[in-house]
Image 1: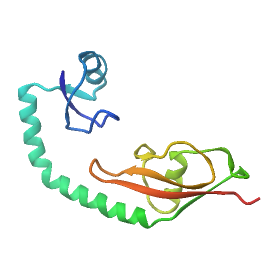
Image 2: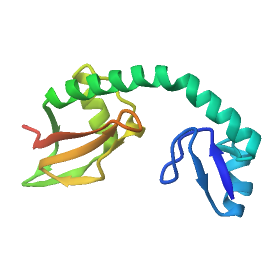
Image 3: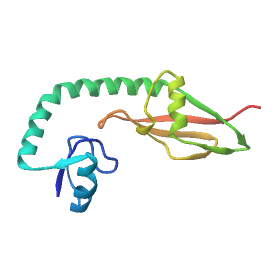
Image 4: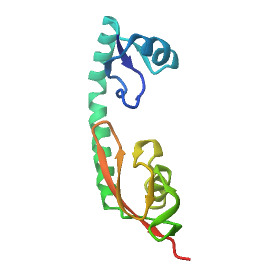
Length: 147
């Protein structure tokens, strides 16, 4: 079953992509939740026309995302956390990275940060998706909090 995505769906595709899914997943979840619509020939024509009109705007959005990516690469992120030796009391997640970026002056939504759960001090990298074509590897360091 082919559908057109109305919103980004993780592990499936981005907005305005035409993807093939199993019929039950499309009919019972994606379409009722408002994430997709059926990919009929007329819907595909409308989508093609909309994509032509959005092409110029999309170029500006991509250039803005690339500029933001360059500023993110220049930021050094150090997250202080309570630790006993090298092991943390708790963990560091994408929420903590988003807060550290906000302190540095960049407001990035935590949904677009992929880092995993970190439970030890050291240097790590997180993946930040600014646009479907622009993904930045963001290095960060976790240090033990001084008492």
